[in-house]
Image (cartoon, rainbow, N blue to C red):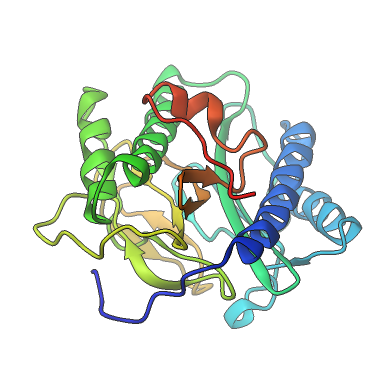
Length: 273
């Protein structure tokens, strides 16, 4: 929930460094997308991202975080988040969520996307699209809302508008980000009575809805990382890192700063440059 922990407000220079980290994440995402196909293992995707991050002179946010053993989280089908890359071979129709973080000069970027491999179930494609739409609705709320709770309101409204009874995962949420990957404040993906802190220039936030095709109930596997749906339903996860500047918002992990998707919400991107 919304805590009272101290929020780290960034300067323009710090946000520009986070933009560099965000673009490394975007490049890693693009390389992983290009490599993703049936027959590839999740470990091979992890190696692709590791090479991109190292080649940029950055470091992975995830590797070694509380002992996490990989560069990416690759979550397949009923895995919601924190899937550990390994020898799993991707199959036609798999729903694959990829989460990646990178650090540049001590500042983090973090983003996730979901792909449904060919021979897809249309319901899985719709699930991923609804999750991505909810992400952008939540991000747009950072430009139009007064308090952080507007993000959860917008995400839940977007999910309801999809017209399918998706489960909104509540145990794993968005977060502040900056000199650490996870910072205050919590960024909820659902509506609550609490309005949360006032949105202010200098906030940097990771917005990351996770939806399921069934129940929102989750469990953690014996590896102490992988989170799955209890009912075996498939899940999707989308995320971006967003900075609030003096003139508006800037999606640090989107190559275009979020311009194309935010225009659909009537929001103009305002790079802090």
